[in-house]
Image (cartoon, rainbow, N blue to C red):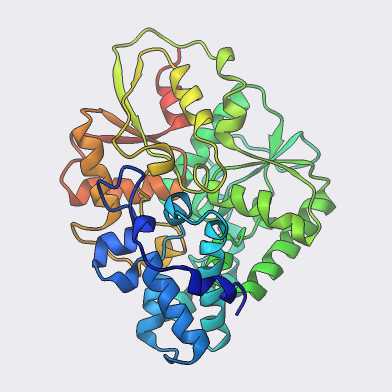
Length: 384
């Protein structure tokens, strides 16, 4: 197994499951289950046992390994700088080992099968991939400056579609030259990679790169930070050389072109997406956008930026739901934390986060007092 040489270096101090202030639990799977095996240190110990032959692959081991939300809190707070960057790589390699031995949770197997057969986890035909844009004027890519890549959630999920329309509509209004791949788009594969299906990820990456290159794409705007992460950091291993931006990084340079109307002050708290923040180090851009909207008062949650609590949708859990719900689900803990700030709006920049947090608001009976809006929706709601 790759990265097995670092497994013995973890002596399970436990800092990996905490935020920087050590005053809470920040690992979604440990927060939910409270068993040490569901912590990063516990996974390191289990993987060591697997590699050494002390334990056998099993359905229980698979559920523990696939419950990881890949949020990177462990990387942020591990006290061993020489190998901390490879913690998630080790977990991915562990899942890859289980995939190779066909010992994966049924939900994960179903996810892989759907991606392989349909190019999306919703098992919907590619002809419906552009349905999100039917009500707005979005051009098919034909040499524009940017390709707007919506990803599976933006294309097929009702909440994701709403977010895709808000971003595309605002980009068009601001004069950004962009088009979409329409039915030629397929899954970016970020969750496939994180879940250890290396062969399927390579297939998706090479397929997308070929489509992008044949279309003449040079620059890409992604709706999801998950897609941004895969296209920016992993596609170059397969020959890509595109400039990749997450949509707030484009909006930040254009916000001065918007004429905002005078409105009552609104208290907003921002939920950092893991794949924009901890994975790619961008905590500034979304806050720059929010700070440019008149009347928006940004109120930070106790856990913010590098200590932000994951919504629990990463690592494939948005689709597999291996973490499940309940009051200790990280999304529900997160909305209770947002409520404590006194905010009126939870701002998001990820379609998975938008869906997870909206569902959590309903479960916590907070949908009448808190509202979820992505950055583009918030900008549109306050312009003239």
